[in-house]
Amino acid sequence: MLSTPDMTDLGSGSYLSCLWEEWLGLDDLQGYLSYLDYLLWVFTPLAVVFILPGFILLFVYLSILFLHVYKRKNQLREAYSNNLWDGARKTLATLWDGHGKIWHGYEIHGLEKIPDKGPAVIVYYHGAIPIDYYYFLAKVILQKGRMCHAVADHFVFKVPGFRLLLEVFSVLHGPREECVRALQAGHLLAISPGGLREALFSDETYPLLWGRRQGFAQVALDSRAPIIPMFTQNLREGFRSLGNLRPYRWLYERFRLPVAPVYGGFPVKFRTYLGDPIPYDPNLTAAELADKAQQAVQDLIDRHQRIPGNVLQALLERFSPDTNKTEDAEEPAIQPNFAEIFPVLCEILLSVLALWHTFTAAGVSLPKQRQYPISASRGRQGERRGASQQSLLRNACSSPQWLPSPQLC
Image 1 (tube, one colour):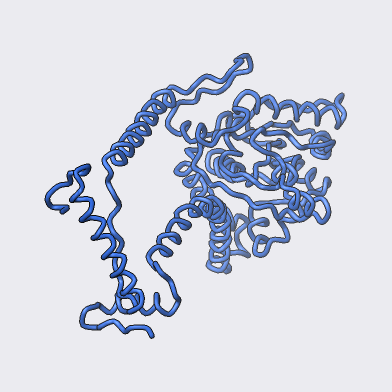
Image 2 (cartoon, one colour):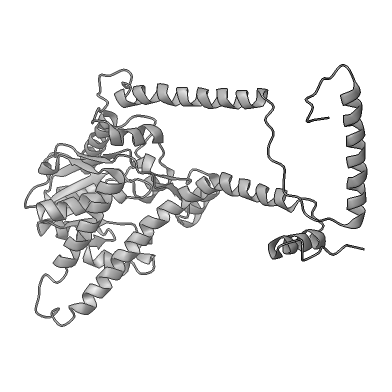
């Protein structure tokens, strides 16, 4: 038989806790709750790094929602205006530019190499999420007053709700003839030869996974446009992919499904570098021009990116000047701010360890857990344990080997 606790002695919360403990047969409900709190504390950081990339997708869908609202508001002017979407592009460019400045301290170096008019092919390294291209496009729209067409994988055109966004920002699915027409019309064209394969399987060592792709070089030759290499520093430290795990690689190689999870969203420093343009040369073949463009992007990586990338170092660069790695430097120099912060962190760690040792040596015990009413059988067992403990205490107080304080006896 279970004894029913007296409601006059317990609050409603304590009474319910007692019933819960008796019905489930739990000896220490508080202990189980503490264990759940510990699990929550351990797994919360893991959940956060996988949730943050979702905010980028949410921001993209908010941009699409804005375009739908803008289209509905201006549907009467659509037949009379040739630049219906200019206001929407500039508004979204302002939002993305603000996001880049606040979250990543985004900078772009060499924007003057983008021509004010005329065609050019921008060839860039593809991160796990090409968020650097969004920031770059925002800068081109706001500072150059130009629109940059882009080539995307067929998979992007199958994402629900993306069609309007792709149309407004002139994203192409990649036929060579369509790319040549865009360049011959005087537009800019951005291409990542690595594509989804580079996004999924590249890592913090920043390998270029272009294979033998030469289509972008042939497009540049056919349109007589220069090629401008582009790379963004710390791109893989902002977002990383688990595509190198065997199941995700198998899914992509077998079914072309880019389903590898992306994690990160860390507020690391982003700097986009534009290299010197590679001018049109009719004497070059597509293979030779492709190799030349790949080498130009690789030079940007070697010059501006620490290999392998480090998230902590990329975070510290938010608070330090641009001290890029040079080609003739054998080892990367230590950031001055990091050299100042590291001893402080060590001192804090040693202080915590010393404090913990002091409390342990002093015998400081944890506060007693809250006592709950128990059944009659458990109460009798507790009384017997209490009586035995009191007997041991009396024997200890009477022993000359132990001289406790008077309050103890």
